[in-house]
Length: 149
Length: 139
Image 1 (cartoon, rainbow over the protein chains, first blue to last red):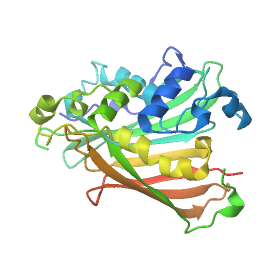
Image 2 (image 1 turned 90 degrees about the horizontal axis):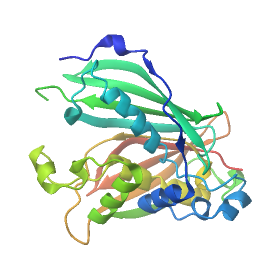
Image 3 (image 1 turned 90 degrees about the vertical axis):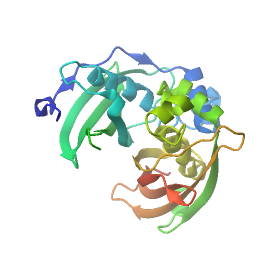
Image 4 (image 1 turned 180 degrees about the vertical axis):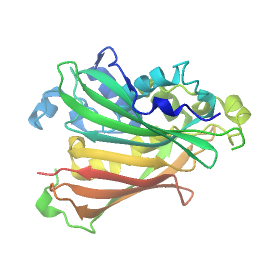
C-alpha cells in the first residue's frame, strides 16, 4: 500500500539532547579507520582550531538514525521496516561536530514519491545544539520495497 | 594540511584499499548503533534473500571518505559529503574479509571557494557507492 502523502511537510519535534562524548568520537573514528589526532587528542584538536576533539564526517548518522526511528515507529505511517533500504545519504556541515556538543535533531519529511513500485521517503534531519546553533543537515532517502519488488 | 593554493581541478587523490572483515562490521554496529542483523547474522541475511552478511552502506561511506580526509590532512575540512548506496558488499566469514577500493579526484572549484571531490568505491571492480562526492574547505 502506498505511503500516506499527507506526511509530506511533517516535522517531528526535536529529540532530547544527545551529548557527544570524546570516547564515543574515538570509538566511531576507530570503527571507520580514521586515524587523525583531532578525533582523539583534545590538544591536537585545539591546535587545529577546534574547541575539543571533532567527529569524523559521517558521525552525524548516529543522531539522524535515532531521529528516523521516530518516523519508522509512527503507527500512523505504518512503515514496514523490514522492507526499508537506505537509498542515499548526505551530510552538510556548518562546522564539525565536537565533543561536548548537546545535539538536538528535528526531523522533516520532505517528500514521498513512488518509483517502479517502491515508495521513496525523502527525510531531512536538522541537527543543532540545544543552544540553537545549527551544526549539520543530514538528508537521506529511505526506499520501501514494494510487495512485488 | 594541504592548502587551497596547492590544489587544482583534475588532481587525483591517493587511492585507498579498505579491508572490511566481520569484526569491522561488529565494531561499526556498536559505534553507530545500527544493529540490523543483515550486518552480522548469516542466517538472518540469507533468510531475507541476501547472499550472506553485508557491510553497512554507512560503513563503506564512512571508510571511503578517508581518501578525502587523509589527503586534506584535517577531517574537519569536509563540509559536505553525500553518496547513493549501490550494490551491497558481502563480507565473508574469514580473515580476509572484503576489499573495497576507494579513489578521489578534484572536479571543481565552487563559487564559495570550496573544492568538489568526486569519490568512488568499488568491490570486485564494480561500483558500490554512486554519485559520491565531498566538498572540502581548505585554508
